[in-house]
Image 1 (cartoon, rainbow, N blue to C red):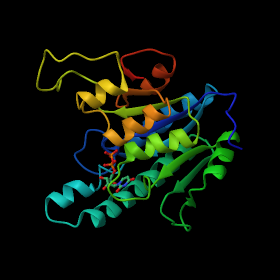
Image 2 (image 1 turned 180 degrees about the vertical axis):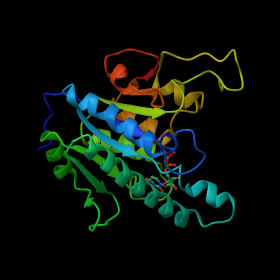
Image 3 (image 1 turned 30 degrees about the vertical axis):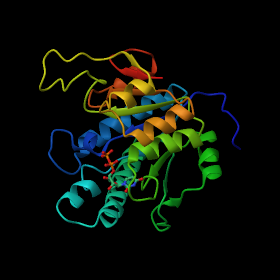
Amino acid sequence: TGEKPDRKRVLLKVSGEALMGGGAFGVDQKTVERIASDVAAVVHSGVEVCLVVGGGNIFRGVAAAAKGMDRAQGDYAGMLATVINALLLQNALEREELPTRVMSAIDMSSIAEPYIRRRAVRHMEKGRVVIFAAGTGNPFFTTDTAAALRAAEMECDVLLKGTQVDGVYSADPKKDPSAKRYDQLSYMDVLAHDLNVMDAAAISLSRENKLPIIVFNIGEAGSFARVMRGEGPFTKII
Ligand code: UDP
């Protein structure tokens, strides 16, 4: 346990918003199924895949705190939102006939295994898709940081951040038509220019562990497999 795998091992971070499809809230089941089939394609290509799922489609602690809710309490609610998403993804992955385990950072033993690193590694070695739920288990963190943390713990080769845009831009491409997508950035570029990719904790953790990050649009069917073959568009942070 804990040894570097022979096969390629990657962590895919799926933002909560990516599960909304065209909707404004909650989960679009068709979108979840499509993401599951994209994951299946990559697993069948011989890659070990684990997932961290966000919860922003259901609840965000920071947004609730802005309206007067206690931040930590809101964050715990946000972490539970990620567990809901994890269960839905697990179901969709099982329909793809992929063996799947949900491991939660907050104990919820009736519906998910507790997160135990060595057990997670074992699941992955056996070819199971592990979904890490409940973020880091701590308030004041994000699922992006959870993704960087779990990817480091699992000794993943790369962290793929699946979002709604096909990479990191110099400005918001929806507002500024002259915005350019970067093909590659350094961790320091992201931190120094406060680029809106991942929070600083996630970037720092990835930098310390020399974990490359690839930002791509998971809203495009088949994009996960294409990115794994090195086909763009995406932004790589190294
Ligand atoms: N959260 C937390 N600690 C963590 C991960 C998540 O408190 O380690 C809470 C936080 O309130 C966050 C919410 O869960 O707003 C949903 O996660 P996130 O916003 O990262 O989801 P995403 O943006 O990926 O949908």
